[in-house]
Length: 192
Image (tube, rainbow, N blue to C red; front, side, top):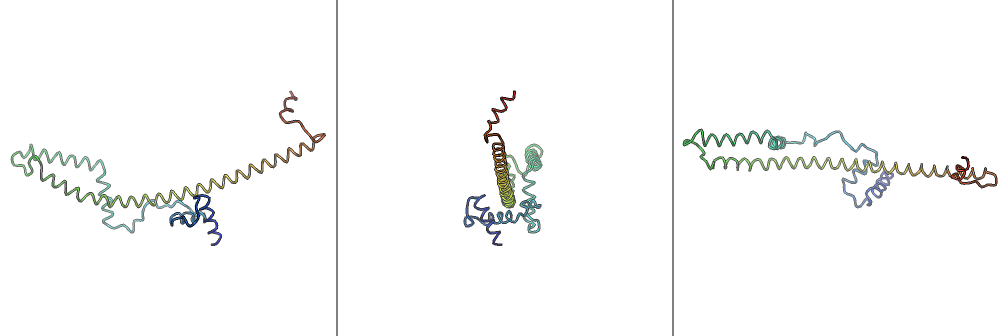
């Protein structure tokens, strides 16, 4: 466990440029998963369905339908039909004549009911977005760690290669008569 804390502290300092004291619970949990090399992405793409109430499911359905072209088309047809019915078809016997006061009342009540239902659905969507953001944060941290490790390996290989080239050059210098050789560019030019 002490080794894990050391690794988490290292990750916090090198990836987030802060100590463990400056981390929130979410950041600490993400670093712990990275330190233990756990999978950052999960298979469940949404909030678990078992904790959702009937009202929340209904709110999601109402918001989904209320924001669709089907709803807009049906509601537009209903309003147009209401106006035609109360103006042309019923004429003098219209139950809601031209300024359509009763229609205005119905629309106001519908808006008063529909707005909080859509707000409930938006709150649930915000919770889903937060979970997605946390997963993305974890994946980004893990990717950054992998890239840093790859850079470290590339730097190590580069230095090792340069060291080997230096050894070869010194060996070639020592093998040449007199201990000194011409630069490679000069030798290439004289062989033509």
